[in-house]
Image (cartoon, rainbow, N blue to C red):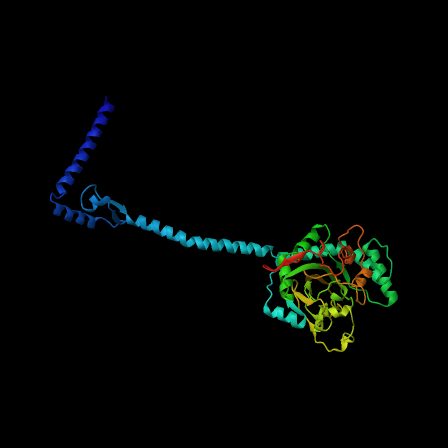
Length: 426
């Protein structure tokens, strides 16, 4: 019973409070329309400012004329905030798209082996002088991976490289270890009074090894091909060969020579990149040196006549030397340009990777009328490797399959770049 009485008392108190509030509002609310409007304005003035203002949404024609349903008041600030939010989204959408494009570009840059863009200056220098220098051609993680891969391939094939040098000297060597072949080469050079030659390992991108794949991905990239095409001024290029040139401290000079006079291509368009894998701070560290503009005198006619190309050493060519070079810097030279390298008089080994490209429309040089067969020089020095058919500098791995005078198309010489819109090689 007590609980019921308590509940009744609470209900009565609540009812009394509600009635009192209604009576108070009825007593203070003006009876006339004019008085009510004045009262509402005064009450509005006494209220603290709100975060939201109000605007009227008219509910049809009747409401706009003061008849029909009452006007519904909606917070205008909310509507304004919604409008601003939509506007921000519209503004942010292009910004988000731009950000996404930038992220994609950054990602592509990470996957791009070449950070260098060929300038007009580079192209003109290459055309006129036959050589140019590209700073920072390779950098960062790409350079680190590439250097490690080249070193690995060099170590794997050092024995083969020593034996190749012995064959060049006319010495047959059956050495199967690096130490034995190295000792045999040193002995052969000593007997002939010759300095120990610089070790060269060719086509290090062709083997089926992880390190070789790293090199292959770099040299067959469209970015690398584009740099070659831009410098030569051609529309399409194919990869010819790669090589690791490691000149140990104290090793002698590399004699003056050109590259295209041993390559069996009927073209003047060949380029070789010499990429420093170690710093080359001075001339004593054996960078390449170039006989500037010699590519204009020593060219395709060489295969048919030596007339006008004798005694080139008396022409007075300006010798260009590029040092210092940082690891990742590169020089590029024309296939006919005469070039050399001084002895390595430093206390450090000089390591470089060379990559050669040829115009993709090049044909195999014919034999009719030529003074000698183009691949004679390389055939003497480099033979196929029995346990690695895709390795070696020899043309014998592909030249028998190409008829003289025909376009050079072979899986070992892939086309790596064709300019957009250009005619694709046959």
